[in-house]
Amino acid sequence: MELVRTFDPQAMSAALKAWEWIGLDGKAPMFTSAFGNVFFRAADGFWYLDRLAGTLTRPWETAGQLQDELDTPEGQSLYLSAGLVWAANESGVVPSDTEVYDFAVPPILGGEQDLANVDVSDFATALDMSGQIHEQLRDVPPGTPIHLRFDDPID
Image (cartoon, rainbow, N blue to C red; front, side, top):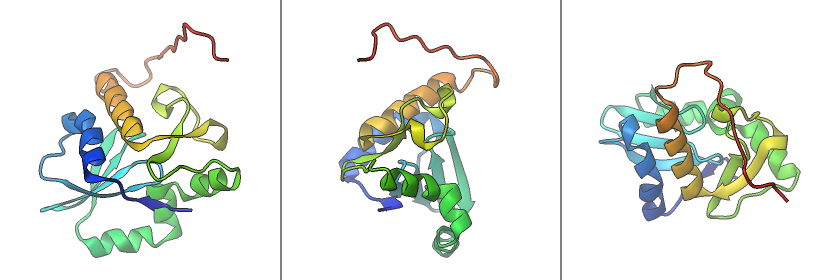
């Protein structure tokens, strides 16, 4: 079970196009979490793109700080969703080399961050879709109800 993943640079570049609105200039992707959250290096430090929350933050100034935090159980829980990854793995939900864990219903659209909602998706598709969703919802006031409508029944 891998908490940290690396992907082909072309797939990473394509997937991150949907996140250009968040300010990725000057940031080079290094690796992702098993859920496809992206860790970047830049001249001013190390950045974290949380694709579930739709945020880009700079929690670390140095590579050592980043590594030290990811070596702790708290850091693994916060940035790598370690507990949920382990639970999904134990239940038989395991991504392939080109996939990441994902949520069937994204949390921003009301999905729960629990094992019952965990699935796997193609990495580039998951990152692209979450970027599009967050861009479309970024100006929607917090607490605004979002209604999902499915026209086709799910078999």
